Length: 376
Image (cartoon, rainbow, N blue to C red; front, side):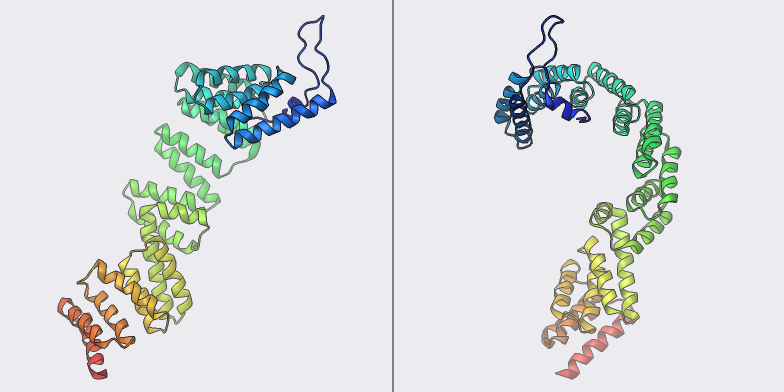
């Protein structure tokens, strides 16, 4: 709801003049204070969804000033919440007639939700009229742009977005709105161009990078999509909101997780264990059940003197997922050995030896098993 004249509407200096010959009596300061108290209390009751109380308070307000648009508007909000759509619409219409600048949005919202073509046209006309009266109000222009999009009036939507940008400047919302207009208009090249245009200005914007990656994946261009994943991995750690966006993107979350795991391996090779642990944690925050990451993290954690119990728990998860994987069995067995559980360690290492296929890993597992036999 617009509130530019909210204070004026609440002051209630005089009711409307009923006729040229007879004016309504002036409201007293005491009545003015009563009105303000009841009005604000009703707003609070609406926010708390205590509609019975809100109706009672607004009834007091109407007794003081029956021609206040904001009272009608709030009554409309209550009856809409109570499911009395027709009554709500009548009240919104009265409110708009009494105070069009303050009471247009709830009315337009209500008409648009009705999913009725005639009502949608009426809503559009209401907002168009308000926008003409307030051509420098970016919020009204943005609302009208969304109505045009809803009505598939693509050229008008773009023109209104131009007005918004002229008032507030070009930003991420501008680019996203333009992308959505072109996308729904089925103008794919123009839609993608809007994403690229914004990324040229803000190349580290996570939301737009993910959107661009999705476009690549949907067109089966996997290499450039993977390149974006590499870029996203470099931006980790992300803000909570950005991380949420990344986690919901299946393709990117999977590859960023793998990239961070490889980065963890590299840091271990450089002797930077703390940085390696950080990368592994970031990797697992995206794919908690990634056995490959769990295995490498557990092995490095164990042999470099980290939390051995944590290493054991992670390694145990890998063999639950892949009970015959020789690499995971070897890691688990070696972690058990480091804790002095040699009989159980030997069992898992022998099982690993039975399942290994390549000679390089066979030699590693055999050496581990020989080491355990020597320590008995």
